[in-house]
Amino acid sequence: MSAVAFDELRRTWNVATVQRDARTMKTVSAFALLLTLAIPIVAGIAIVREHQLPFLALLRILVGIGGFWLAIVWTMVFLPGSVVMNSAANARLLPRQRRRLLQIACAGWLLASAALATAFGAWKTFPLVGLYLIGFALMMTGRVAAVLLTMLPGFWPFLTRSVFPEPLVRLLAAEATPLVATVVLLCSVGWAMTRLYPAGGDRHLKHWSEQSGRLRRIETQGWSGAQGNSGIVAAPGLRAYAAILRRDCRAPRPTPMLMHALGPGAHWTVWIATVAILLAVSIGLYILFSVRGDDFGRGFLSGFSWSGLAGLSLMVAFSTAQFRQHLGKTRGEQALLRLTPLAGDPTLLNRRLAAGMLGTALVQWLALSGALLILASMFGHDAVLRQLAVCCLCGQAALAVLFGDFARQPTVGLARGLAIALLALLELAAALGLGWLCGDPLTATWPWLVAISVAGGAVQLRHGWRTMLAAPVAFPAGRLG
Image 1 (cartoon, rainbow, N blue to C red):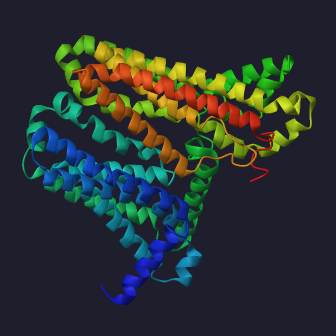
Image 2: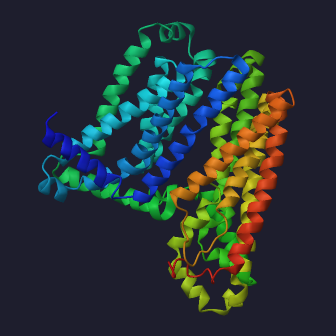
Image 3: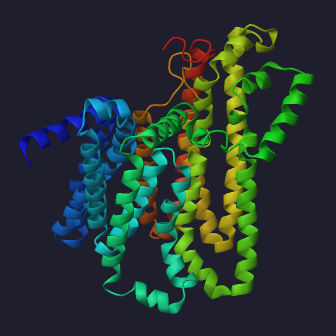
């Protein structure tokens, strides 16, 4: 590679990452450094218990941390920024920019996937890791349908054990299959990259306009706005919200009206369709297990109950994100409400808004957690206890972003999100350690995790409540920022 090409790649990377979001880059790097500092702890535990230093395992951990850093930066910072950079105007000003963006995007995906597969210790995991990574990357650019690509790796054990026919399973177990799958995946990723970075013309203008619109809607409305008007507010939830709004308008009270100022997307009714789908899936699985027998149920348990239920639990963790998203989206409605008597006493606005948000958050947590626990009951009592612990931990993460000084900072930055994720990991590690001390980590961990997350959530609620009551009037949000 020539010095000119290398300099162009470096400049393109810096513009799409460091210059676009320097704070996020620093936060992700600090988080990766913090994870790296855990390597000596792992080494010390290995020396005490095994009386030897596992160099290969530590090297895999280090490579995995590097792959994790690159995957986060590539998917959450570089890819959205580079897609916006690939405009027709920039293509005229910088003729080689599209080529450099494609080179960095492909190289970033390949390096991150290879590093994470190395951390798993088996190259046959590369196709699954790479598929998940490209699916998540496409989701970050507004293609919500790509969530199917992220679900396939989690369902893979179940598919190979219970769904695929025996000849196909033997074919997939062949030594040459990972190589063939890698080649197919590389071709698919190459095609996906050309879709992300079109090459000029009227089609480029239309595609770039649609892509930029999706990214703007994600920034302002969250994932519910990624597909325009077809967000998570399904028809049943919207009808229920309309009925509740009519009822509240007949007997207006400040607290409900403050919540209505955030729009239907911040109301608990947006989750009606999701809860209904989870309950329908539970009924379907019950019927399926009854027809197929216990062996099929055990195969599904091994393939889904750990990864699938844990992935669904992320809905609980993000269930309060809708408040922050709509705080910045409905500033006009908030300002109009402040001009009417329906807003109530301004000195009580923050207290009433906090009470309404907390009530809505608890209703959402109960509904989603209840539906997930019913789904987990298909897999036995151990799965229910584990799911309850995970829901409590995700609920604590959801409450951590519930309150704040909305007049100055209505949104939640990536730095705070990573801090919440790190706290959840530390609590999980503490629960695992306490379970190990009790002699039964597979069983004793989950009650400890419930206790730790509930206590941590109570502390966070108390601190957030005091912060919000001491802050300036929340409406209109962001006016002092």
